[in-house]
Picture: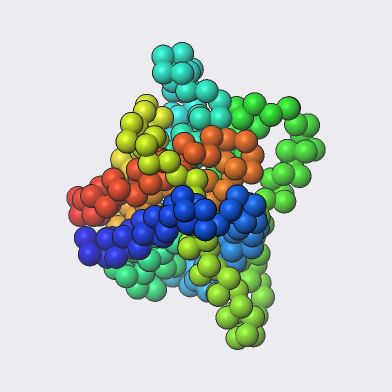
Length: 307
């Protein structure tokens, strides 16, 4: 419980700081747009490169953990898409709002997962989260881009344009670079390692400040169906499915616990930046992120203990 709270409380406080900066006019809209861009294109890719390049991937069950998480994401994504007609017809969840609900139901906060797994399980925990990064991040971004193209209300894209968007996505190519550095390239010089590490450490703070800037307290006080569905799918259904599949794959012990952590941390702050970049409902995305942080403070320790 203490390890979970030690990661979630600072996260919440950074969001509150971003909200305060926006509410007081200390940082104006144009400055927030610049921070969003550099966070998405520089800070988050550096975090993924650093995590994957350093991890000891040879001593952990890559197929068991990574395969279970990928399968769980695909199952929850299919469930969210199956609910889409009902949510629109009965509850008025439009296309842009659905993209936020979908991201909230499937994506994960890598930095929080790294902090909790590293605190509880040391280097093995970090290595397993790196496996999760390699397995989940490219797939999640591919799914998110596909959902934005289909439901965000923008003009249709040709197959070539879609391929270009996927290939140029910073979060996808950074995973490729990180794995290449881990498996194919000799160790990088220490100054370069330090450079990437410092950029990666900026990702969480910058991403959460941006989320806080887009947050409306009054709307979160009246959570709707999209908030509830995304939170239940992300913090309950996804962990249960991932753990069930991992056990069937022979994963056990501490490795199961890290699988739980990867599946049950709140959604990623990069989801808010992507919503802003691609025409999603960004305010709803910010509300979902903050609601999940509050719920995860209770649900995450319980899931680790019982699963």
